Image (cartoon, rainbow, N blue to C red; front, side, top):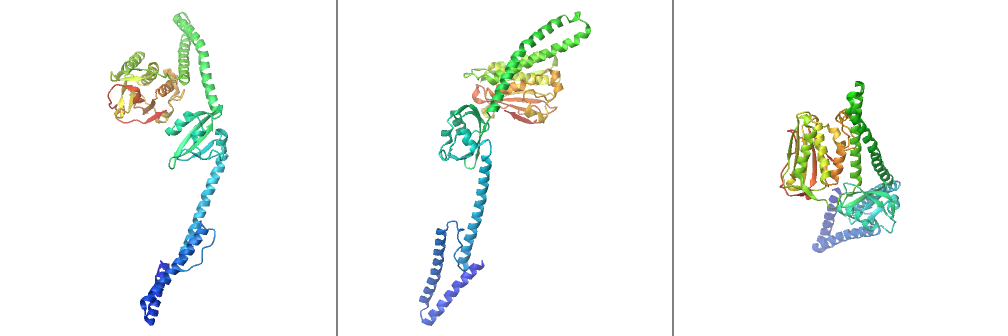
Length: 455
């Protein structure tokens, strides 16, 4: 503000002096014009100096600004200081970027920057090793032209990066890579690639081991169980002290047989390809069958059952697999509900027909919130003693999850300790034929219990 006052005072002084000279010379307009012209000329000369300085020094920091005075001196100094600050900020950002690049170069995982057009901007040494990128030849080229796999191109363009993608390494089918992509900025992408060959092989070995061991255990367990059943038919002829041990042996052999059966089913679900042409079938008879079989198995518990599903609804899928999934859920509900409880199986469209849900609800003992996220893990026990008493294998919900994944569906669990549970199987509407959209009540009880999605 002080410089503006000084400049205005300078202009007024020039005009006053010019007017005085013009009065003395007898031509005030001419001297005023000459004074204004001189003042403007001085300012244009300062502007020309500024332009020459900036043209020879684009960053305004390489050389000192021209010497000046007044308002123009403030302009020169201000531009110079702004240039210095900008240069410091640029140097700071460049040092951060350089450190980030240097640190990422030391990583074993591949890090790749992709611009909004899908072209490579930058990558570290691991990306060059794992993906074969070469600098500067590949810079600016579309990443889908360099990773030539239709599955990667589909994954990249669909932009649904909620799950990673596993593919054979380019040029080396013996290695397996896992791709993860994150969006940032203006549709730019950060791609992380890991070599998961060892983990993939270990997973295959685990699956083979479980499958082979299950097959090998099946025959001896069947033989042992068969002999025990024969002995138990004549248990009255044995000494009384043998009756309880033999009964427990028969019970545990039956439990081991169930575990082997469930392990074989899990192995089959993980390794067997989904049928390409799944056929639609009526859902209501399947639900009634699940309800009837569960009621028969737990007929001594005094439960009441209710099944609701429109007769015209058909679902596209494998009937045997879906029966296994719903039967597991219904039997779990009956197993962990005190005598005289209520079990409901309901099926209907939700969200104005955008999805379809099958809900299995009980008013049993419920599940504490901290256990919900782990219920579908193999052999996970909420209460080991309780599971042992009920004869559970700890594999039922893992089987349900895998069956639903094979039908493009997911499992959501709603439960609260002491207030019952609801297991929700949500299917895409494309798998449903017939029926009218309607709303299923979102909670089995007055208070909405905690819920979790299991994928």
